[in-house]
View 1 (cartoon, rainbow over the protein chains, first blue to last red):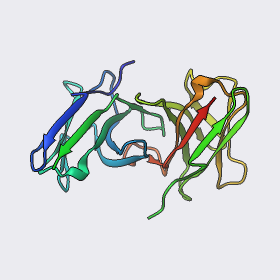
View 2: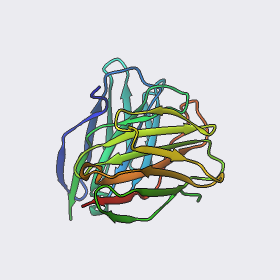
View 3: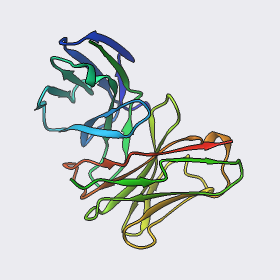
View 4: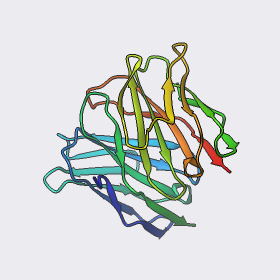
Length: 112
Length: 115
């Protein structure tokens, strides 16, 4: 299944602007997580939002989850050049230690 | 802060050769995973491992792949006879507990190139 599809695929903004990335999924989920990946590097966990939560904040990150629309958004406020990376959403369908299903990712470029 | 480690960081091998990718999960974690990411594509689940056995595997994880936790700390992925299409970044991940309130922590990855 095409779980966790992000849009846009690429986003280019100026430093100081906000960046919004969206993720859609198809099945019921236990939670949704956002990860960041610098070019060719590992995955860094950013934030986890459970299916019974609607919004969560962590520093400059704000994540929303709409289970009725099966969608989530990641907002990065006051972006910095160091935020340049690929951002992936990943969904967990069950709570039995199951697999994460990743989307294609959004490539964010923040220009100084 | 505890972290998942992986070795080697890069591996180049000839088609048909066996490779073993190694991971040391976070010490009090109970669930272990391998994922792979072909260049420019999304991260794909390969296999999950719990209580010393495979709990789930994807279609990618065919008979050429195997996993092992030989000594209570290492978690390995073996590819018996590598193919060109096995070239990818391989990530190990671990999870402390199920229930959906905790996150999987990923290692830095092993970049495998099959020639």
